[in-house]
Length: 95
Image 1 (cartoon, rainbow, N blue to C red):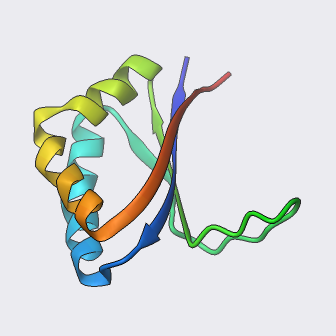
Image 2 (image 1 turned 90 degrees about the vertical axis):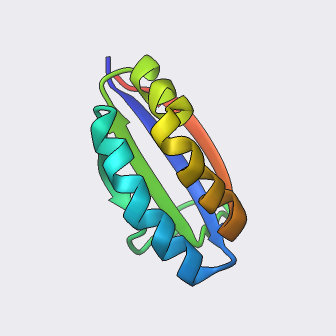
């Protein structure tokens, strides 16, 4: 069953975040994932949610998503994101 990692990101260091994007993509692909949404325009349809940046990744399963998030090749890359952005991230099982 597919799983989706959904991330809301507030970028505090745009230059650092560009480095993160460049380094993160190969780790996503290496762990069986792909980008579904990567920072495109958003429009609020309901409520008062107005995120600055949304990223959605698709993985073959929740286990694959967690393997990516915990992977050694992503550890240093994740630290870059933590340094240059504030994030909220969930994994959701698909159907």
